[in-house]
Image (cartoon, rainbow, N blue to C red; front, side, top):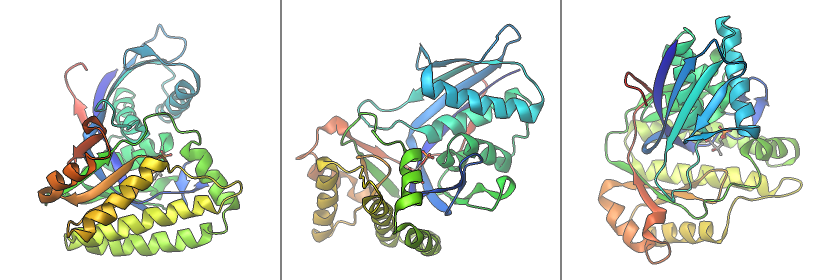
Length: 325
Ligand code: PMV
């Protein structure tokens, strides 16, 4: 009746952008990510007969409002699936480096899916956890596994889940540049919806994303870091282009975002392979090889404070915790 789990965040190299089904969280396109070791969430779910609703403690504070509602909706699905109507005490802690700008629904819902599934006696296989995590947040479906992970879009609830494709233990690194840590004004949910409904570039995005995914799998297979970086950078730019063409248009980029993009181009001119990717926010992640990390940090330190620069390694998949968190 109690279980705890830890899950790490992931960064998409081929982005998920757009839902085919908002309720089930079925994506318009398949995506591919790298799980990181630097940011994780630990969550403990304890069923308690005495509760008349779920109680959520996040980072030491009682959670309320929209974030709590999202978690309660998720827990209702868990109760529906298990047939057990008992409410739970959910204690969750985010381990995010100070100033990283990383607020991750991916690690959060992956850790919640695993701990809730075990506490309520649901199927805890990788496929089942990935499908369940997806219902909380699409990108969470990928945080069930470590290394490079592909989320196959599928056509229905049963076949839309992630699979591991490579452990990524050959020297790839991500330098995270925290440009701005404030909460974004347009949620990814809203951003996706507006893009799908109004952007004339959206149909092109869907075609390009499938092509990029095939090429990315080849690049990963060959451990070709430069190819991985080139495809990831181009894919991120295509996703962001769909937003500029939406009505009303929007972008997550800020001045600092452009600065990092220019530094990546500059570093490449100096012979240092370094490629950017950007999610639905202003922060930038640079894809590089372990041997170039120091040179990249040195360059960026002229523009950003050191605490805004975090180097991440590939991380593991979801883990059940035996000790209390
Ligand atoms: O899973 P969500 O709803 O947080 O959406 C994630 C969207 C992107 O981060 C922009 C892309 C991705 O694949 O993670």
